[in-house]
Image (cartoon, rainbow, N blue to C red):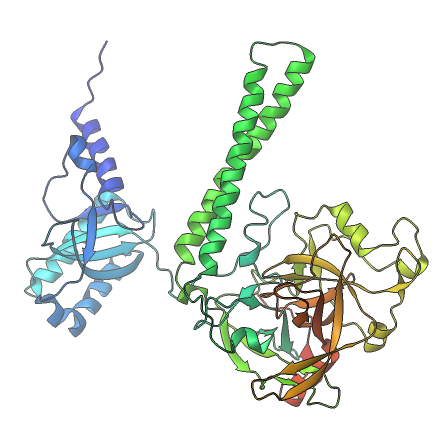
Length: 521
C-alpha cells in the first residue's frame, strides 16, 4: 500500500529543506527563518545545487539612508516586536558564479527564538519600513545567527583524562606552557611562563615570558612557516591514528564472527569496547578540529594580549650577574577570566604514564626517605598547581635525596617545543659567554638544568624559551632563557632564578607581585 503525503505535509517538508539548504555554500550555512522574496524554492535535485555567495552592496540608494536613521528605525521595530535579533546586515546574496545578485537586508536572530510563521510577519514589516523610505527593490531575509567578536574566542578549559581530546586541546588552555609569539613574527614561537597579579588586583592578569620571545632578534629566513597549521595537522594525525585503531578493532571482531565460546566472546567484548571508544574519540577530535580551524584561524583571533613592560636584554650587567631576558604581557580579559582560569598550573598530560612520571620526580621512590616525603604527589586532575618559590639557598643546597642518597632537586617544565620534560637542577650555577658581532663578549650567570638521564633527551629546545621551571611541589624556580650544546641540540638548559626576576620586576615599577593569582568570575 502506497501512502501519498498530504499537501500540508509536503509543504512542511519543502520548508524544512529550504531552511536547511537555502544558504548552502556560505561558511556557516545558517538556517533560513523567513524571507520576503517570492522566488519559489526549487524542488528535486536542483534544490541542492545552488551555492550562495555574499557580495558587497556597491552603488545602491539604500547606502544613502541606511545610517541616516533608517537602521535605527528598523532596530526599534524589531525591539517593539520582541525579536531577539543579533545583527542587521546589508549585503548582496546570489548564486555562486553569477555576475549580479540582489541587495538583501539580512537580519540575524538568536537560534530557535523565532518561528517561520512569525519570521514572515517580521520580515514583511521590515520591508514595509524600507518601502516607506523609498527603498522598494530590497528584500528581507532572516537567518539564525550569533555574533562572535573578532578578538577571538576564549582559551579552553582543561578536561578529564578520559576525554580523547585531552592532549590535543592542551595548547589552547590556560595551563602553563602556552605557545606564544609576537603577532608580527608568527614563525618564531616561544612559551608563556607563568601568570602574576599586582597585589589584590584580580582583574589585571599578567603573563611572564622571555623578552626574545616577543621581540625576536634578527631575521628568520623561514617566514612562511606557520606553527598554527602544524598544530592543526597534529590533530588530523591523531584522528588518522585513531581511525587505524578503530579499523583494527573491527578486524578483531570479524575474526571471531560466528564463534560462540567464552574466549571468543571475551575477545569480541573487548574489541567492541575499544571500537566504541575509538569512534567516540574520532567524533570528539573532529569537533575540536572544526572549532579550532573555524574560530582560531586568523592571527587576530589568537591575540592573547600586549606587552606592557620589557627592559632591554642584558647579560651580567646586574650585581647578581644573571641574564635579564623577560617581558610582561597584559592578558586580554576576553581570553582569560575566572571561568576558564586554573591559576598557575601545569597540565601533566597523559603521554607520560603516572607511575613513570612519579618515579622520575621521586628517584628515591623505591627506597623511601623522610627527607623526600613531600617532594611530589601526582595530582588527581593532572594539574600541578604552582605555589610559592624555591629559595635561593635550596637551589644551591637541595634538601631531597636521589636514589643514591645524594642531594637532588628534580624539576619539570612544559614548553612549546618539547612539551613536558623532567630534569635535574644543578646545584652550582653555570656561566655563559655571549659574543656579539663587534667581538664584544659578556658573561652571565645561569641556573642550569640537566636532562633526567641519557635516554630522556634534552630538557629543552628552541621554542621552549619563556617556560617556567618548577619543582614537584609546584614551587617556581626560574624562567627558561636558553641552553648550551652542539647545535641544534641542547645539553644544558639555562634559566634565570625567580628571586632575581621578581626583584627586577619590582625595580621596574611592578609592586606587591603575587605568583598565586586568582581571578574573580
